[in-house]
Image 1 (cartoon, rainbow, N blue to C red):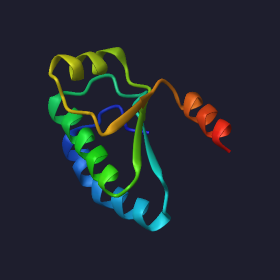
Image 2 (image 1 turned 45 degrees about the vertical axis):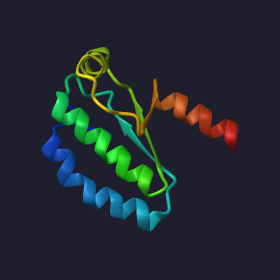
Image 3 (image 1 turned 135 degrees about the vertical axis):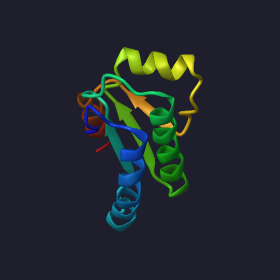
Image 4 (image 1 turned 30 degrees about the vertical axis):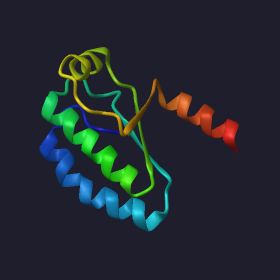
Length: 102
């Protein structure tokens, strides 16, 4: 879960540890739960997109859930590249997808 005050510097600081953890654990996907995040600016969104790109290059997928309308609107208006990310409404939807594939 991303904290309410998430920012690009926080994401950058946490990214290296995340990549190492994903690599060592063999997890196939990472879920970024944004449900507690009210606002993200273009720098924050671009950093999240970069993290998705790195994860994709590692052969993993990155899902974003709980994106608030204001954050989605900001990303769309500023045309932030988030193509490396997959979007799902809620954690429950991710759990439902998981139960259908197992």
